[in-house]
Length: 227
Image (cartoon, rainbow, N blue to C red; front, side, top):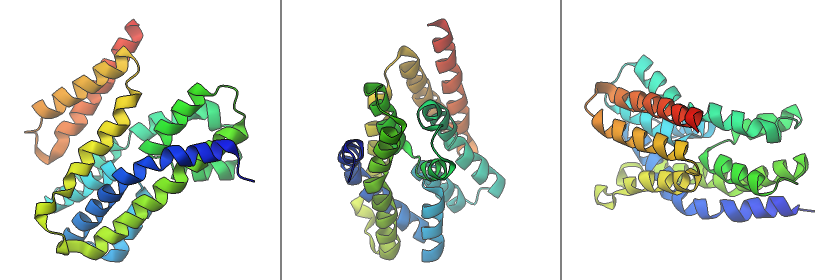
């Protein structure tokens, strides 16, 4: 019988499908245009499952940036997963190893944001409830991302440039980040990251994004220390 937290997780995960479909399709189109085969595109999106890092890597590959910079930039964008893991460890750390492996594989912005918020709102949940909720959030999110990437890769260059599908990228992050800005440190870190990223847009190879992330983390940590 399906548990209530699982159903609740699915219900909260489904709205993200609306955002993920154009987002994933856009990645499939861009990856194909960058020269990746259909197999490479699907392996990339199925193994990494990190839209921001995937877009960053593809853009840098198109710009003929050295492989070391591509890898460094992709890792820097994905550093937030380390913080996500640390944040969820008190809730999901006692789960069996095989469950933690699957959770780590399916840990993305959407599943993290929804799960962390639900755990805060339901402190009486058992470990089973928490794992079930996480699984529920992942059920619509993962197929939407992989399936839409496949559609985008199959369409490839047939998608007219006038469609401007890249609007999905900022919308996805706004939808995720907005509800998570709960403290002054969060707001300061977000403002510093946006300001620094814009100010450092001239830095070659997209390294300004890495510098902006470091500045934002330092600012947020300092604000947290003073609180």
